[in-house]
Amino acid sequence: MDRAGLAVDVVRRMAHVTAALRHRQGSAFAELGLTPAAARALRELDPDHPLPARDLAGQLGCDRSNVTVLVDKLEQAGLVERRTDPTDRRQKTLVVTGEGRVVRARVIEVMSDSRLLSGLSDEELSTLRDLVWKVSDGGCPESFGPE
Image (cartoon, rainbow, N blue to C red; front, side, top):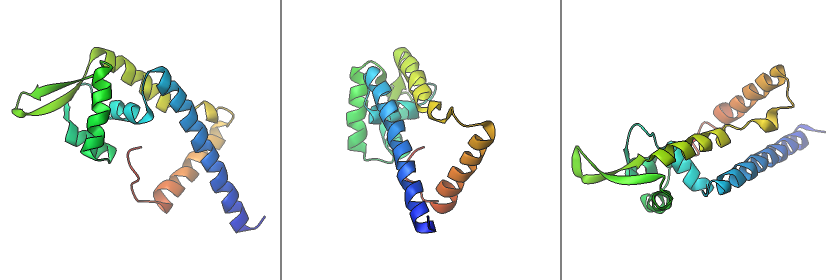
């Protein structure tokens, strides 16, 4: 196989791995009653540091109106509360509830699931990490949103 064909095959396989990860994560998030976008939003919220919605929008790299919809869903599920900022009463901050902390921990667990990589030896895993880093940071240094 020539270099161009090899590169096409690698990209196709990377897309397959990405799709498999998204499918597994999407199924796990659905069991938690969350969409992938709502799960990402919950993950970005620090339970110990309330955050204005505009800051969450910046972290997610999306429009504030989209964040409003996500926060509405998280609030309806009892995972987040909007509270008045004690230092600026004109502003609302997003506070992760007790239940939100539990669900957020599960979301982080789901996003860190590495079962797809369980068939690799430590050496192979290290090599793969180095290669993925080289491609993602070396070849595509642009930011495409939160990791």
